[in-house]
Image (cartoon, rainbow, N blue to C red):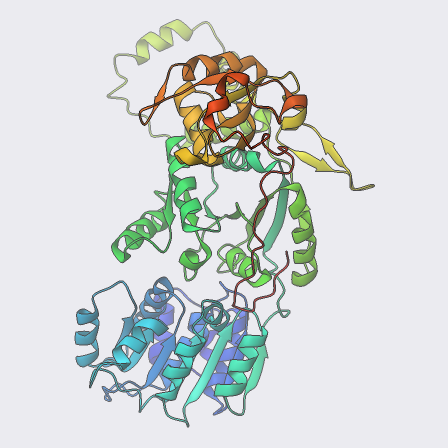
Length: 586
């Protein structure tokens, strides 16, 4: 087995690594460190996230630093604040026995005055995000990069995807032409190759693992549900695995916050991290997550870049990203530091094509898994409870008065009978909680790829004509999400009981589970919404979906003949892909 001592590092670094508990290098460290120590060439290193890249460039970087020289000798550029902080912390620990080496983190969202003072005190290594670094370069006599010997571009593909190409050009032009440049990236897209060609000279390339392939330690899974059942499916997977410790990805900041809020409301320990949070808020959320007082971190792609938490068990894609590279970076949040992990995608039927394209691009297999049912969840929770019983510390003092009573009452039962009764009570309680859950799965036949519905679709469930008309629509600020929340909030009904919706400018038609229609109707009848009297009626059923109730013809202009079919819905504008140039797979 290779050890760090065989890689050519100085004794002070080896001692620091030993104190940190690092004995054997990872593959990327084993291959990159000797190359970076023994060559004057620029180097491109392709390796997945979570493989130890910080030490792979950080240790050779520290070999280059003269502790007596207070000028900036090395520059590390990273896409996010979190990654800057992480890299700086690692460099500080690696250089613990190198007095005079002073890494300083420069990133937005923190006090620029404090960062300026840190530079003025002497920073021979700068770790920075491009935006804040450009800000400092634009100020007179604050930052001088003319003596930089090494530039590291960490997660270069992410910096380019985030639109930092012009910033990188400006920053690199402020550094000497004879510097060495080390580029680290998980993927080698066209933009990464262009920046290597433009800014690097005599470049060598080191590839650890198969190019653009998924990390071997990650199990890629997907489940197929109706779109409106994605939230229910997410909760089932969490309930079925009490040890789950996950990052859940959404597309937008709004969806991220909305999902986190709903999970907390339903009793889950969750919080959101996204670009609208201040640095203090982000630090607070990440502190809770690293301390495992949060079970679920709900994140956008941008906010999650640079998150380095070693024991994440699951990455859950509540929304699939538009690019394969984004999927790779998301999934790389789990299976870090040699651990295994699961990347689970909760998708609708139409997204199966994306999964197939991902399989081809990443050269890996995605396993279909079913959404857990009630008995599976109950059994998993019971097993977790048994584990808790084995580990519990009994407080004899608190139970002093009750234990004799319990011994007396249960004396007639043997150990086996007590266990049977305990299991029966516990499992009956869990089955009562989870046993009646409907099956959310949509299975795809491997033979003919046709849908086999284990759970009726909303079209099949709501064929009895229990359709609600309400005189609230887009004009009153309602979209489908807000309407669902309004109806559930006022009636106390679960979202599973609400079917398809058509929301017009002045009114809406909503399918209600027949057994609960009257509950919703009575809750809304006579209600007021922002001073407007709510009027409800029963629609005429599936076959007359286009007609509006006679008694509410005044709620919209007469020239409209009625809403379009629920199946078609309003047309959506064509969405163009991002400007990043990443490979789209949708």
